[in-house]
Amino acid sequence: MSTLVVDEAIVPVVMRSIDLEKARIRRKVDAYAEELATFENGYGMSSTEFMSRYGAGELGDDEHWMRWEFLHCTRGELTRRLGLLEQVGDEGQNAS
Image (cartoon, rainbow, N blue to C red; front, side, top):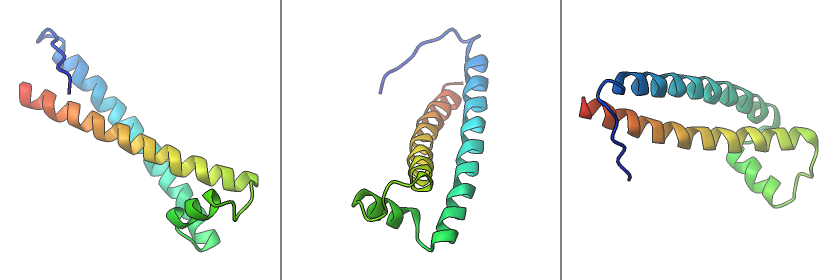
């Protein structure tokens, strides 16, 4: 992992920006999770099962399947980013 050195006066601004971004991402992840649950309940399968079947070409390429794939993949990417920001936030708090 890289180390970023910033003036101590800037740390609160950077940490606040990270906190705001984490909150924004959490809202999106929650919204995507709600929509994913609608798909899962409506089609009677988990997103993991859906992705396996969709990836195997069993479901076709209807628009609603593409939306489900987008939601699943995007939620995963946002969750990954949130984890990275959590690490930065934790390190920033330890440095203060």
